[in-house]
Image (cartoon, rainbow, N blue to C red):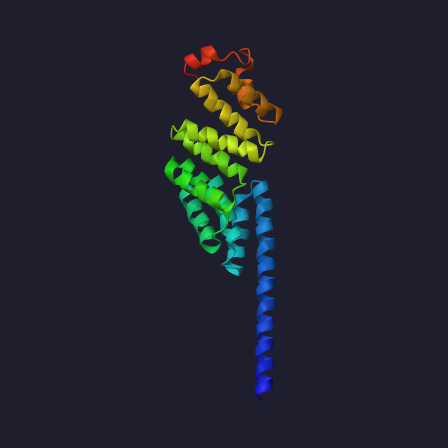
Length: 218
């Protein structure tokens, strides 16, 4: 009798494990489908898929993170923040969700909170170049140009193929009057595909920035 009970118990555990695996796989499929909808700009359809994924697997951190991204793209930053917090509560090492928290607070002009969350992302993943770049943006917006420069430079050291950190660092150099370094960074950013600042000044003889800086152009 005891042997039969043990076998039955083991069968129940095995079936429960199979069901759990199947649920996780199905939830992952729904999240992937949601991402496809997001790429096509179909946010409502994406939200439906994320909701289904969370209903099937309430502990799926990525589903909350991605649902937060939809809220973010719709400009509903408070709702996005709630979703990102759910993601990091479930998965405390989810660096991307912390970075997204930082981005949402940045959009709300809450720079101290943004810096805090970007820092959490960096502690989890010290090679997270985009988090350094984004924290640099928060430092810059706070008026802390020295720390912004350090973060942009760190992002570049980690991933020299990222264009944004060069463009952002160039903006700080321009702000503090280091025209030569600004010129160098804007040129490099454009070589990597980010030419917005380069083109802004190109018609006015690129690298002849002195009169622009004196005029307070931003």
